[in-house]
Length: 141
Length: 191
Image (cartoon, rainbow over all chains, first blue to last red; front, side):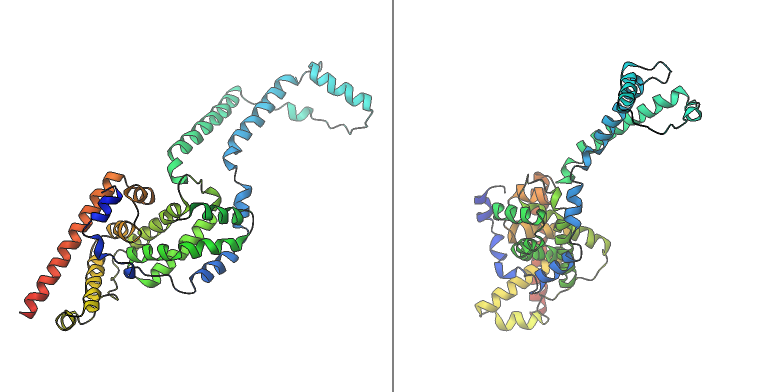
């Protein structure tokens, strides 16, 4: 029964007449529109989050930037080329920046394995997101 | 189903013209309401389901990916809302509004009248429709009232094409059996 001809030939069809269909009440559209007016921003709000699927990818990029920045900007006194460039730039501008003593903050020692755990969690998160999108593709339509 | 017309109004709604949604509601309200009514069998619930479905459609309009037509997408929402609603109220009493109250007198006195016979036949179909499963009733409605193809029904319901065919076949068989039994009973009663 997948072709139009089969449908037309179907002996059962003649029993389903258009007058058997029920119609929506007269005030139906206005009732729906009243309800919609109560939440006028919902479509727009969701529109702002249209690219919410990009959030994990953006966070990955930011994390990678932070990790590479941490590698480039060494904590030792000598500093890297990039760090010395920044300091020399600040000196040239001659901007009197307030000095904040962060020595006590950098004394905190984080165990090495924690970094690996965090990176692992990040990778698993991306993997999970990818699988989620793959298996729920039909539902989203 | 005017696909381009729907898209035009959808774009207007997404651009912030909320009132454009009323055109979408107007276009699809009867079919949405009919589908909801056929599944739940009650006018009040059908209105609630249809309204709820339009609200759901409005809220997630930006997720409509335009891979299928808007009507297919909307009927999927209506179908799922109605099916989940009747599953919650599984033990409800079905309304028999559309069935003549005094069927025996009606049958005997009006058989010669063509209009009355047509009405009686419609009542029998409605009666049989109320006796089959909610899901089957939904499928029968989509196939016969909305004249959807098997592919479209499969898109709306999420049931595979072969399964739609099987379920439709079973629903027809059940309905025939119900009508046959009902008519036999009435004939015995009047003999």
